[in-house]
Image (cartoon, rainbow, N blue to C red; front, top):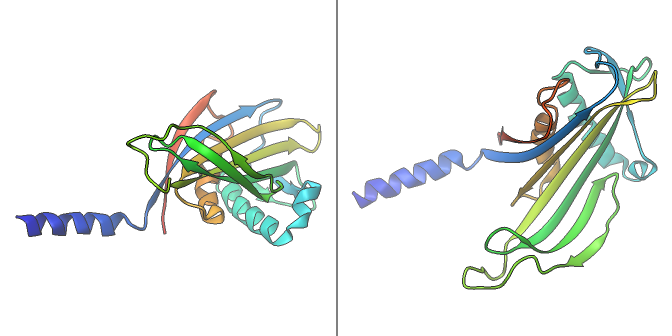
Length: 198
């Protein structure tokens, strides 16, 4: 019986090892005229985003794939919309309840390194592991601007906390969550779970 249970546990662990469940908090706002589907867009960059062109191009390539899935196409010559992206990763030590003890942030796209911080987010106690685990907060923002009127017509943010530091691998799941229900998302903050295949 014990051997059978051990084999079952092992098969369950190995079967799920490659799939990650990305639990994301998403908030989206819309304004202005309805968004035209199948319209063209171009990427807009902040000055800081030109300082890391290789990372910028990787993020934009992943975003291009996600936007194609909702009907928007890259059209540099005749765009209707401008797309402005932001990606940020923050690491922090967590207490036994997952609350931050301190943090260090690093921006990989459109953000600057802001250095180490200290905090007292949790109390050391019997449940505290030592050393405490490191968690990573990934935040994606995407703004859609109507180039004809200059109006910001769509803004979405996705936030995920988890044990993974591979931001570029997580971006497809963050983009899928952030663009869910486009172009008519529900109001308020919502939790969206995306399965990320290996």
